[in-house]
Image (cartoon, rainbow, N blue to C red; front, side):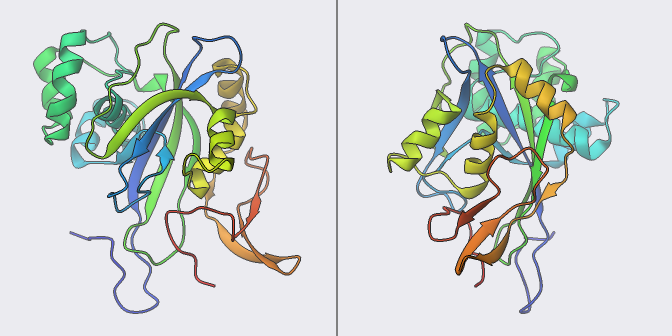
Length: 265
């Protein structure tokens, strides 16, 4: 099993496939709210940061995806996004029929205990609707840290009266709904920590006044792997991403860019 660690100098780690779900809610007047979680400061990746729910893709996710018509890697990523969102927030998104509150309450700790998602679904006679998720982006940094994630981002929406999230209180210490611009403003005020990929995606999501707008944009925007790089601009190193992928801001001075990893100078 590859542990994703770089070996000899110059050897790049193998990226870990992962998936993230950006969930929209329209309870309040004004811009839509997004589901975010605050990671525990003790976590090795993005410790203490505000992120969207998500995590690595497991072999069981591939087994579930095999019953769906999507490409197996794409399907497994969607399953992982659904599973991780359920585990981290207690919100059931992407189910063909809505699970009962009792099942959701029991599934969250069982997932945290690493029980197979497939077994939980089969036990309750539940199936997934992977088409509920809308592909939005894919990020994979090119650096030589211990963990590198190849992360697919998806969009989904919940009904206006969706409940508040229930934090798993393990990897995350809080979970809440907030407008994209509100999270950006809180980060600028030093109230929360936001890593570079999350910041760029929040800026992009802040452009939309509804899930419908975000969905239309996502369906009309090409998805290519975003791999940030460093480049000197006006005498100062900047962290950059490609143009033409829907992001309103594509570079930031390295001194202000908060990342979950180091970039070699």
